[in-house]
Image 1 (cartoon, rainbow, N blue to C red):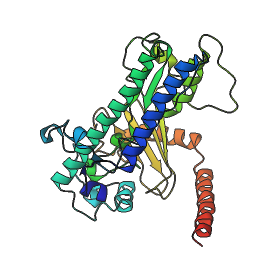
Image 2 (tube, rainbow, N blue to C red; image 1 turned 90 degrees about the vertical axis):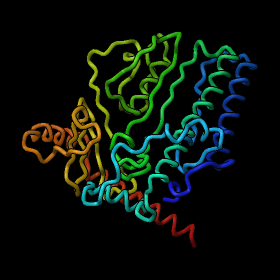
Image 3 (cartoon, rainbow, N blue to C red; image 1 turned 180 degrees about the vertical axis):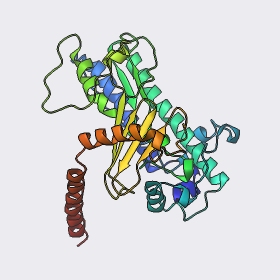
Image 4 (cartoon, rainbow, N blue to C red; image 1 turned 90 degrees about the horizontal axis):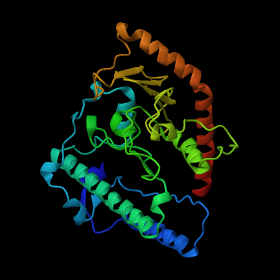
Length: 327
């Protein structure tokens, strides 16, 4: 909770220092490749920590937003009895009850997060300008995405560890003006689609290379080319981290989102009719056929017992190492 209580401005932080260094090395590498006149294709992976907690940004980025531009959560804090069991556990794990989530604290944390988004925009801008200055921009594909979202106080929750839209949805932008016309895809795609997409893009006009193992997901290249036919727009998710006492699975398809974890009641939301995910339909008789189809698909896709055993075995190994390092 201290990330929220202490949200505001800072001169610098470990995360800011890291992102400044990442940007410096990325730009320098682009210039280095241009100087060497190396004609081989390159793949440059640039990973920032922002936007992320702690919610603290330099004054320059804080001042880009007035308080009146920073919205408060659409769904206010829920009482524990209104939360699903997983949300109650996340609330406890993050110690969100230690300090009161006042309107000022929540707005300050969201204010800093918005500033952090602008900060990353500027860092990406520096890299794009380096690509343009070196002549790489016309034949370089830029893919921008993130590993998770941020609850930002919605439902009284923060951080990730949840399948609600705020935590589960991420940006995914692919920029290659010489190859693809601007467009927006409204169907669901997933981070597992990135590997087959990069493989197909890297192959150019030739055949895609053989892979050493199974690649889950589907290439996004047809969508970039405006071809929507035949694709099943499905996003899958797993939570095996804080707050989970058993593997937690999610299937998002069409208007529905289905969430399953063995100790908890099933969850089913109609995102078109209920975008804030306030009405769990899983126990309603008129949605039983929809729930059953998702349950059967989940059972076929995941071996929950094998995954649980793998997690417990991994925990035993890591606890052994932790005890050894603490001696």
